Image (cartoon, rainbow, N blue to C red; front, side):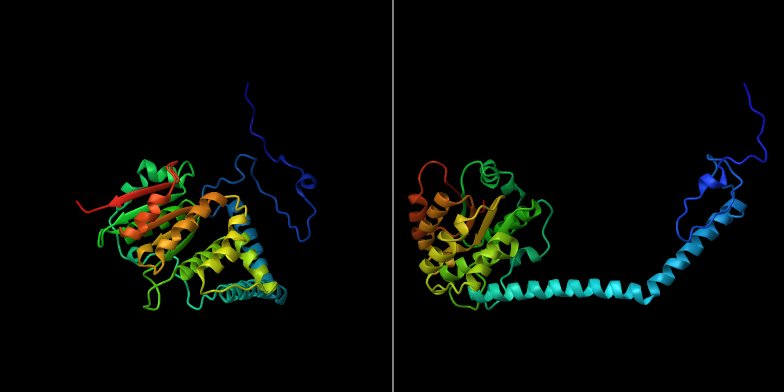
Length: 305
């Protein structure tokens, strides 16, 4: 069964094709539904009609964008963003005041700023014990030991970037950064607290509330910092997702051996995961021996073969 060619027939009535929108224009196209957007050349009348309609519409839009009303919208949006930036800058300034962070704390490890070979360090994150630590299945502490020049800091930086790539909230501290003086546990704790506040809104609000309520503590005494900021604050928070501390070169801290009891407290009160790198030392060996045998602690000795 065939159909003869239809001529001079409207596929859609004009009244059905008009939507009644402000500024709406209409034009007849000599084509059916299947061919409405198919053209043999750019000289075809239907193509020219549609092209001219698009060009005219774009010209109208550009004219509106140049109008004062458009600039008013843009300026208002820009002012809103500036206000947000000012608020963020003010919050960071207050945080630095609360935690006495006079210098900007780096969020990465210097070694990783240089080019690395593809696949470098991946052996560590493929280790079963590391994955168990990372995925909250066993130990809360992963301790990487190694002699000087075995690549501990490089591996620590790789772990930090690996966790960030997974979207985990990480706080980093390296004992090798600073003003040339030997770092202290107080500085380590304040840096970890500051970095936590930068990536975690709950922690940030905790410190801002402390500032608003004029709550003070001895910033040179790690025990005071630990009691006020951590035991009475951070370790009581429900983060809703895993948080990680990455500490490089702990052995270079003046009072590194006092870090052990603090880690014990983390195990008792919080689910924070801690990654530490250090050289082997008698003081730190005492810490490792103090951990209970129920897989609360993983140590891995790094050496060059």
